[in-house]
Image: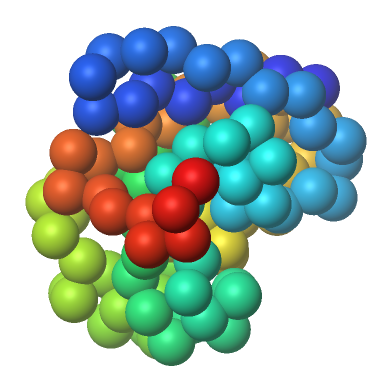
Amino acid sequence: MKVVFTTANDRRVEAQAEPGDNLLRVGQAAGLPLEGTCEGQMACSTCHVVVARDWFAKLPAASEDEEDMLDLAHGVRPTSRLSCQIDLTPDLDGLEVEIPSESRDMRGV
């Protein structure tokens, strides 16, 4: 399945994924600036992405803990999510997300 990331400088990056893959790990494997400092434990907001409006409704609702972490993220929009909380399913084939310009990846990638 395919996931399309749009970077802060409008570069489109298509990544291949398998059902069950986690969006954060897919983005990191594609070399994108998604730090994921807490390694998916929902203790940071360094994997913040903005989901394309058409795709947002296809995702399960964010938990209260995820919403609390998004309150700490820069550049939050109505369709913001933490990529570590999105597990890919076949109905998300073609998912489009944007990496906010405020994203910084301190891993040096």
